[in-house]
Amino acid sequence: MAISELTKYNVQHRSGNAYAEIRDAILDGQFTPGTQLNERQLAEEYGVSRTPVRDALTRLASEGLVKQIPHIGVFVRRLDVEEALELLELRRALEAAAAESASRRLSLDQADELLKLGEEVDASINESDDSDKTRALELKFHRAIADLCANRELVRVLANIKAVYLTLFPQAIRPVIRGQKRITAVTHVEIARAIASGDVKKAHEVMWEHFEPTLGELRKNFAEEGNGKTETA
Image 1: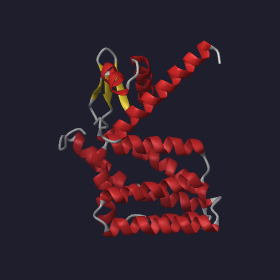
Image 2 (image 1 turned 90 degrees about the horizontal axis):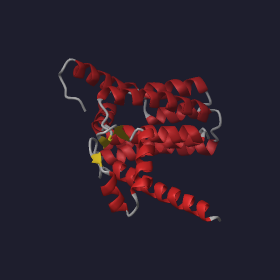
Image 3 (image 1 turned 45 degrees about the vertical axis):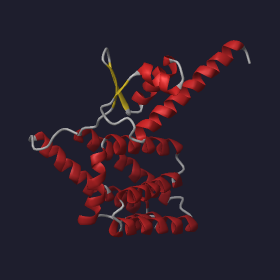
Image 4 (image 1 turned 90 degrees about the vertical axis):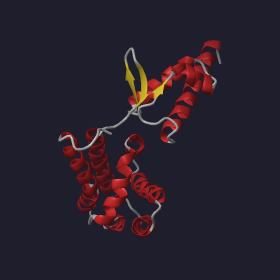
């Protein structure tokens, strides 16, 4: 490997490491929404030059996790209710497409596994007070459906949307859990059965309806915010 190629490889490697470190810190809540990210401080913390950090922040901005404001700085993005609503509407469209695609290729064994996972999620929603456990199970269920549709780009985009929504608009998590307890909604078992039926239209419709209670909560919050009844997230 030529020296120039080695140098280029090392820069890319350091940039990748800086990106992973900063992204993990944001997703873990070490850098909360609204926090300003200082290139020099991050470079010192992670033991790299400022160039890899700058590259990492540019990449994170393209993913929607940070916001770059010219001549001011880089900040961990803070979603308002309207942005959260837009993200969840996009997620619903992609999740419904994933359910439709998965219903075309689901094997009997896969159907049984998805049904068992759906039962586990619904039991946690109805019986557990551990919202973190419930959220983890629900995300596992939806990731399983995305994996079943065998579309790597869909899996990647969905994962990023969920990361941005759940990390940068954390107050949305509680309505999700509470809403499914107090509002009649499509359960995860019903979703699993619809996908296993092989009826692509039904699979799409059931997944679409699954998101309506949470979207209803956010639409209500957005309307109230517009009337000055709530504070901006």
